[in-house]
Image (cartoon, rainbow, N blue to C red; front, side):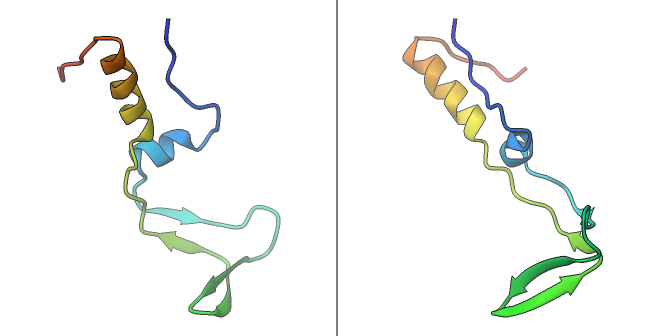
Length: 74
């Protein structure tokens, strides 16, 4: 038996990408980050989302191929 996966909670978001979403601070009054060398503080950020990086899908395909299996989209 072969298992392909990750035990980190953000793995599905990296693998599948995310849509636009709002980020708010959890333990502070503001978020702090650097843009163009300047420190910026914000109470809310409208994140545009992230592109998928399907590392889990690729690992599954490579592992299956190494064992002579293939997948069909259905």
